[in-house]
Length: 268
Image 1 (tube, helix red, strand yellow):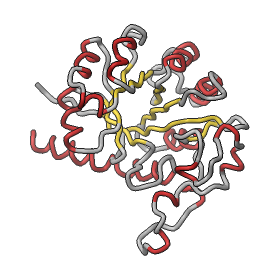
Image 2: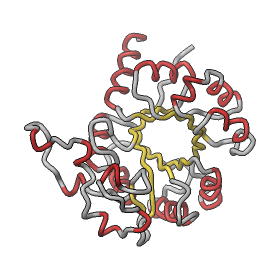
Image 3: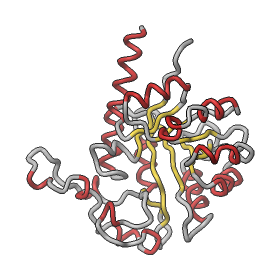
Image 4: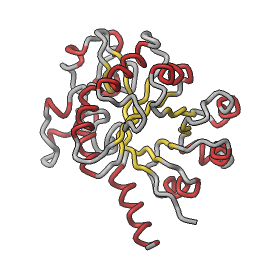
C-alpha cells in the first residue's frame, strides 16, 4: 500500500527557530517549502484580528496586557520577538530586529502574503475560545476570507477550533470553507463524533494519538481525515504516516519536509 504524503503545515510559522506568529517565522516557513501555514487569531479592542495564541502577552511580549483589551496601535509598540532569543545581543549571528518582521502580525497581512506568494500555500486559521467577543471573531474572519474570495469551494483557507459552536458559526456563514474540529482529549471523541459534520476534518494532538492507539483508527473509520498537531519528531511523523494522516502541523517544517523527502527517495 502506498503511503500518503501529508501536507506539511507550519505551526505559528517556523516557530521552533523563530518567535511564533511573527512575519519572520512565516517567511522562514515559506522559504523552507511549507505547504500551509497555521495561525491562531484573537480580536483586538478596536476590532482587528491578530495572530496571537495566548489571551494575554506575558509569554510573548513580557506584559500582562490582554489582547482583547488593547488596540492594534498599542500592540504594535510591543516587542514580540526578544523572548525567543533573549541573548541575541551577544550572538553575532542573530538577525537584527526588524519592525516589519518582528511586530504583532494581523491576519489580514498574513493572508495577503499567502495570496501574493508565487505558489499555492494554504492557511489553517484557529479561532480561540472562550473570548469576550464570542461569535464576532468568526464573523470578522469570514469577512476577511470573503474579501479575498476565499469563502468558496477550492479556498486555500480552512478554519479550526476546539469550539464546536465556533465552527458551526463558520459553517453557517461560509458553508464551503473546510472545517477542522480540534480534539484536546481522546475521551472527548465519543461525544464529538456525534456532533461533527460528515465532511469535517478532525485534528487530534500527537500526544493523544500516541497514548491512545485506538483513537486515530476510530476517527478515520468514522469517515474523517486527520490533521494532527504538533508533530516535531521522526517517531511522531512515522505514526502519522502509519495512520494515513492528511496534514501534519509542525514547529519544524524544514525538518519534517526533509524527513518526508528522504523517505520518498528511499522508497523510489
